[in-house]
Length: 148
Image (cartoon, rainbow, N blue to C red; front, side):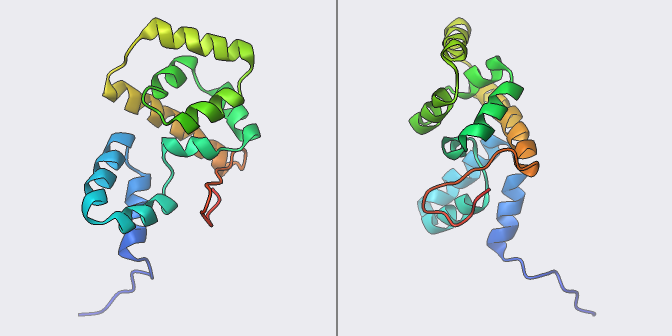
């Protein structure tokens, strides 16, 4: 039987690649399951995948571009349960008028289901991926040697 070379990818890189193609709920489930028994693996995986929470580290110009491209409803829904750092970075890159519009939208729609939050985040992260591919948005997490 002939041997074939599959490349030099490690299991961690393969899993990170799979996670890059999963939705937010699946990523959260997998990482949450691994966190208890393999916290070091989760830390390493987080270095290789991009999650909604990473918007806390988006560059101002890129984040402003993102905010122009996404629907305010998606933004309002996606921010439910988001870390304070994400909220802070987004608010810091919005005009006062846009921020007031966002607050009104959040108030108007009330609490969304988890599936709606995940879907809104997935739509936003699809735009983030496009902007990053076009080098219009960058994520620079602290203590991380990878810049997306």
